[in-house]
Image 1 (cartoon, rainbow over the protein chains, first blue to last red):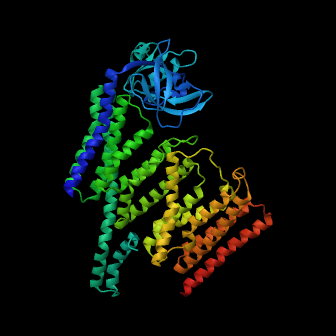
Image 2: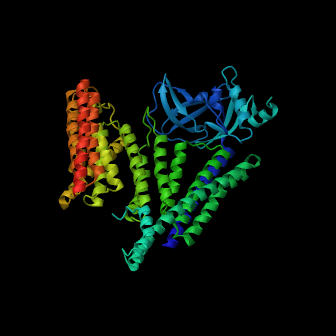
Image 3: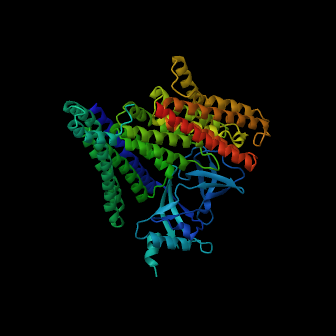
Length: 183
Length: 446
């Protein structure tokens, strides 16, 4: 009985390790092999963006104009295309499974005013504790209505989307913070 | 019943033994025998205290490790952070192997190792997620965490782990749920909860740990009730009354049948079930609860499954009653046991109204409510009688309370004059006083 317990625990321990390890493996694969897409961030309420150790992200592309709401499902697949400005747009949504470097899994939300609302699989950009408050200020001031110049790069590989970098004024966040020290 | 052991009374009795021997009330042999008899249960109580301290200790140690890692977090490279994220998990697993091999008989070691391991899984997943910008919803995180944690409950036989798991499955369901529209997958909650049931049954059978039985029962009942509420909302089927009546009847019947016969103190299942039956009965006496809101869409497969789950409870309750009836031992209140049937009849009556009239006041909804008013009155009276018969003041008063709650409910939702309400209140109050006076006299004379 004792040996049996130990053996079962060994299997369980492997599974416990495998879950985070698999996530790391998938992410490194997607970051290495995925196609880069640029998503413009939507204006955010500066107060709402302050969330401790991460920047809360919102995207204009999370609102997809379409005549009918998606049939109820827990996941939907967003087909991406590059718009004229170089930023990614949603070509169309589907509830049938698909993979590829232009397909991203999204969470369907409500439908109103001729638009299907969806949630991207990333809504926060994690930061280290020291830079979080500064980054938050920079992102909030760059994402207001009058000055929309923040975007993120996302790598998409076989339907898996990995958030890569947050850009402000065309610079990666850390570089931007270095060149714009707080006054 | 073996489950209800009063440790304070035991300690008092053991302290009294030398005095009793000195006073010549009992012989020193008898005193020794009594002392030995109660020593075992005292040892169990001490070990419970130790378990709690050990659990708190291991939780603090886990938190300390996280703080140490977090302190230098900003300076570390991504791969180093990733390795460090796994460190608490590796330590927890090594401790787990040690405990299974060498300290398997100590509840304190098992509980601590299990808590440490489950916390380490959460730490590893969340630190890796932050480091690599991996984002799933909180709901997905909870589900993975629960599924990785469930084997630990069985391997380490941990009551704290089971409690955390039960609460965790409710957190998962509430984070999954959305009040405005249905999200598929909500019914997975029942599968999650079902995974812990064999452990709970084992705790019930080994009646050695009273606190574990009580705490896990209360948690399981509360979480299932929340789950049933969400399920009913999810199915949009107007089966809430029948489902809740069946749910609490099953708990009440299981408690009473397991306990076997009328005793002065009831086990936690009987108490919670009886309370639930009474609350459901009074709630269903309001006409508004029989306003039905027919859904125009045909149910999805998952909604149909939800309806099936909701109906399992009344069916199980009726089956339990029937089984007792066949065995000719009926240790429970017959009116409490019949609540699912009454609710079923009332639902059929309310459903007989024309679809257009169902969401509003209509004669059928009124008839269903009247049925439940009568039922709640009978239930209160039977609880009162059974309480008196069992010589339990608390249970007799509970029966009166049901009647009083019913009276109160009717005073508030009917158009009675102030004088009539006043007289009604006085009558209910007088009922309480008279019943208790009679009860006291009976006890004194007995």
